[in-house]
Image (tube, rainbow, N blue to C red; front, side, top):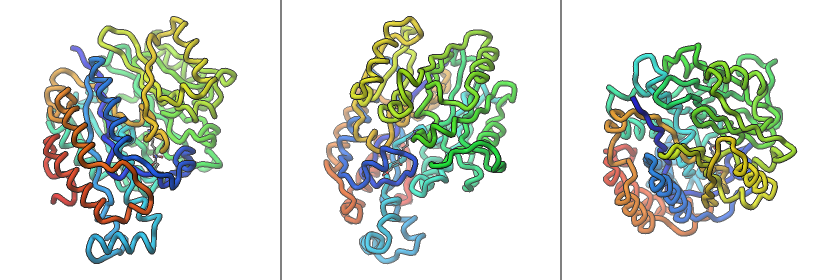
Length: 444
Ligand code: SUG
């Protein structure tokens, strides 16, 4: 039986802005309070989706969330009309307002952990939305994410949906950004690689000192149990705490895997040699690794360019493409490295560059924007077909973005009641385009 890996990208929402909300994410901190362009951000994301579709890959769309998050603002005690809630929040607690306005659900790699049916005891694809407890603005996402995933992957014979892990720092879970799967073929059982940043219940274990480790080992273990994965086929490894302190807040900022190939920095994992040996055994000698040495690309250069946040894609003709963000061209050591990579016969055949400047300025590269879902042909047919990108849907989304999104947004605009109205009008129309039903609180 064949299976393909589909990419579901988070559509950028109408409130995309730079609030500097993510401690430990260097791009987010350094762009704080700069004006953003929600329209450019959404069009850049859509251009990437269109490119993958044109390459012959299955590309899906995940809807953004309702922002400003009025329900949370009211839960925080702001009351009155929507306009009063917004203006009170802007006056009394502007950082809470910013958290309630983030378009952060666009980084779909953090939406959920997904295990393909070939790995799961019941033969279904398993989804657990991430609880994202490490950051307030992101902790507001899981409920709506769960509804979006259910509306996209609705058929219970093919798809199993779990509740997010309890919202505690002990169980901090950031979804697929810390999860990779190695296999020889997508249809066969693979080795799921869960990467954690700290052990919450053992304070003597290695941990970063400067920046938070968002994913815990306890969360990974719970996901392995929930998805009914075969313990003999999973690997749990710790990310190198030193690189978290250098700005690698998710493992996908320093490593990416596709099929039997792991592309990573030499400083990515705590026990990297042992990991490579184990993967070699589990993949019966078929495992390949491209490990980039610090002397060619420093961790700082990797963080600035997001080299490893690339999409590593197998094209229909079997060749492998690395889709890197434009920042790689502007980081000389990285660009030089990429040229040498292409001239070696090492498993990567082609390189493409995507302009994702708007998302990158918040620390979200090509791989952050997508959730990978391995699908058999029957599962692909069971997906909500309206969420799969076609040339027609791409044109509709293009027109929808141009009709509803602002060209420029500053922090002061977040309290504008008109922005809330525009956002709701846009999302209401989108649920029709993607046939999602009433997934947003304002529609209920
Ligand atoms: O969680 N940035 C996101 C970026 C997520 C990137 N995802 C992956 N690596 N998979 C985060 O830090 C910034 C929002 C702001 O500052 O306005 C933000 O949330």
